[in-house]
Image (cartoon, rainbow, N blue to C red):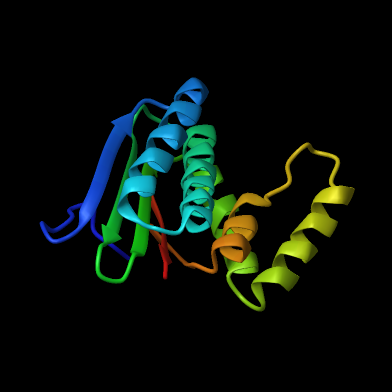
Length: 160
């Protein structure tokens, strides 16, 4: 899992903001523009911006404090992208996240995503838990999850 500190050989952006829904669209636009000048493949840039947006939505939705933090790193030579989102969360939200993460991290990304869509279709609580399965499938990235003793959630994705 990447640390929140980037090195000087990579392009990167780092943002920290309070958990407000209205900020996510602005941050996504900013990320898309950053990626448009950092990597050549516009389709890849769009998928990465979507992944960052999904991770931020989860962070904002389940934050327990005003401390959403995102770091995006681009390795210029390989165009490998790393996204790290950190936020504080309640123990209940962390338990749910761990359960969802363990379910979506194993197996073929498309099959896992389809299974999550089927499960979401029959849920009656208004929750789909599709975000992580979707970004894993659409980006082909590797997700990692780390939770500190102080209930800070660090969710990262590395995309080749």
